[in-house]
Length: 474
Image 1: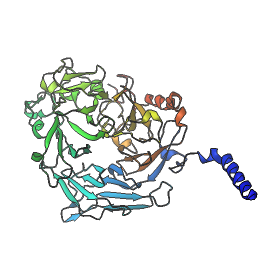
Image 2 (image 1 turned 120 degrees about the horizontal axis):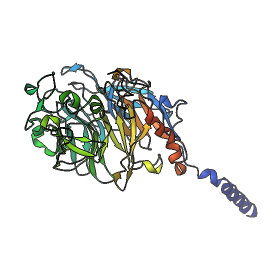
Image 3 (image 1 turned 180 degrees about the horizontal axis):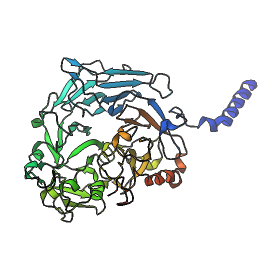
Image 4 (image 1 turned 180 degrees about the vertical axis):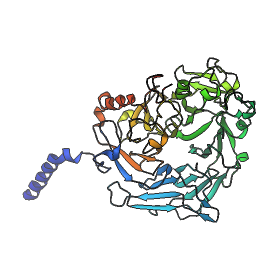
């Protein structure tokens, strides 16, 4: 008996001596690539390439078991000869790299703006330009085997800005974006002088009636049409990134602002004005609010809304009676996805803040094109602090982006993994990254962000100097 007691005592002492190691957290993520897959991140973060090139991609979703689903930008395939427009990826050996990549989706691809990929209540939702589909996910099966249900059908023809982005609330509501097919509802019969100068806007703008807004539908419905939904908000030109924020149970979106202020009103707006105005917008979407398109635009420097020149504005006339964004974002950067971070893997300052994938500008000449980064917007007390940070850089691969084709990659879609990793996919080749935090969460702060703050001096991130940064001499 004494020998037994001595053995138990020795065992307990041994276990006690090992207790510090027993408390070490279990590593739930793989080792980052030595070069972080080419990305530049804050100190303490690392990244690996999950897949190098799955094809031009739009949005993505990550299931609770780690399986990844990507909406591809497929423009071929007809009703009776479809080309699979989705990709499913799985990592079977836990190194973070996808070693199974399988295409699926037996549906016609009806245009280049097929965008969405969402997982909600065990269902996979994805969209083409005109149709929203739903399939049941049944792990461990990677590719859904259930027939694709048609959830929604858009009666509008294929047109510009036709993405059908989705968000879901907690009460059975599905929110669908209907972007406007024009820049600013121009009436081209009114243009005078130069080709586009002094053009007026249609008044009232007919597009506002059943486009340029967000509609709410039943998430469990099938073959719904727009008339069956509820018009939730209006005056929204083009929204690709939309998200339900669980922290305050509210709908948010990032909006593309209008273009061509100088071309349409050279009397009031210079080429520099054209490059830095108007703001892209971070918006909390409230029911029945009007956000001002096409009659207004938002100036991020003066933090005010102004009357659009097509409707009598001169760059000085303020617009009243419209909802303002929570925050103005840099002009023409094309915010194409929005994600509120919920996990605990990243430092605490990131929780409930917003990540934005900026696809990058195409029309800021004669100044460098800009964007092409993933930014982070801190939130405090449920509101954005009013500043944004460079979170992930290195996509463009060049110092100066003269035209969009110069950029190697364009960040497009964001998703959060079950253990808190951030997934980023780009639209040119379909390169997919997984970003993880490997540093000290408790001591993450200003020092770790300093290098990223310095990157704001890059030509594709900073506000251009009106004369010094012109690419073409005047």
